[in-house]
Image (cartoon, rainbow, N blue to C red; front, side, top):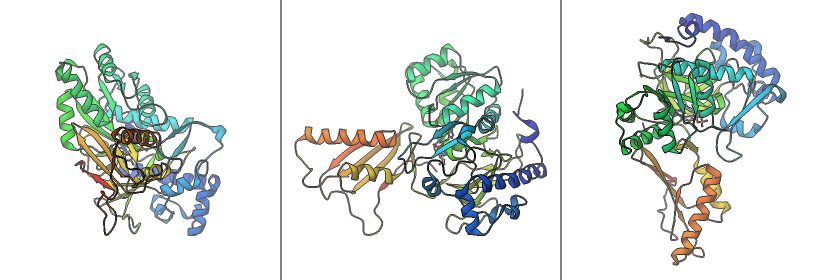
Length: 434
Ligand code: DLL
């Protein structure tokens, strides 16, 4: 069986990978400097020129790029080439301010899909496989990324998108899907639904699952593996860098190999920006090495993780990252969707509510619950239940349109949400994800 999609590079020695990275970084920095005035400006402010970057060891001289920069430069400020050379955009959910729009040339798409193909082959995928992709399709990168990777491997691809679980199960059974790609919480839900419909794990033909886009635990992995009768692999990525496939798990299931020939990873102290040695916990920072549409140098992901170069039994040599162990900002991932408290606050203000609220997130039966308690002003508060329900419904719709998912809204009487003497406790996340 084929073990690697691109064996030469996936199993190259450390020195060979360094060589590839060193050649690429020189070109990528010059490319960005010449084509992205926004970043050139940051380099000039720091007194760095492309001539200062001779190898990846010099990356630490470059300025960081943050989500705030992406917001400031929205939509075209970080574009690396003429729009006429781009063939696709993908985006995250959220307000215009928080939304990330990434641009891809055809070469960028090919690179991204190859990264996903590596993940599929690492999960045992070959052209004999039937890959059921139930990540969302559209602006979200999950569906398109895994779909493209599956094509590259030559698998029969079922572009299901998310939702409609009965139909997912029918296709899974009738077309004998062998690899499932979706968020871990949706995988768990499919497992439960199969059991409810009377199927046993051995009744399906699935052998593997490629699950990511949100945090999940080892316990959840075991549960999913048991309920579906599969081996469950993690996959990581973010819209800014391309989408899923920046890193993926192999058969060892002890962390995800970062596709180092395309993305250079650093871990930094989120407070000081200092680069930390392998093995230390900090914020993950990526530098793209060969992107055209949306090249990013030293992009701060806000994901906290640890890098390791311990030899892997799968034969891959690329550095491994742990599962994200948390975030250095306040972003939550609820049912696979990125949610910031500031977005919720913006909706409340727009709808005329005071910014006294509390978000409660929990995971019940492997599915996220999302409740927002909102204080009314005395003028808004009414003891007519129908009135309050109508208001809750209106707020739910406004939240849904902003976030892409609908929370359960609870309007509560004035002055009932506990005031804090220090920082307000806006978010109570009861999920034990890390
Ligand atoms: O979630 C891309 C993706 C799609 C990854 C499908 C894997 C599978 P965004 O919507 O931009 O992109 O969200 C990126 O999600 O910074 C992490 O905080 C989180 N995340 C992604 N993968 C994982 C994972 C996609 N395997 C943000 N475990 C990232 C934990 C993850 N968190």
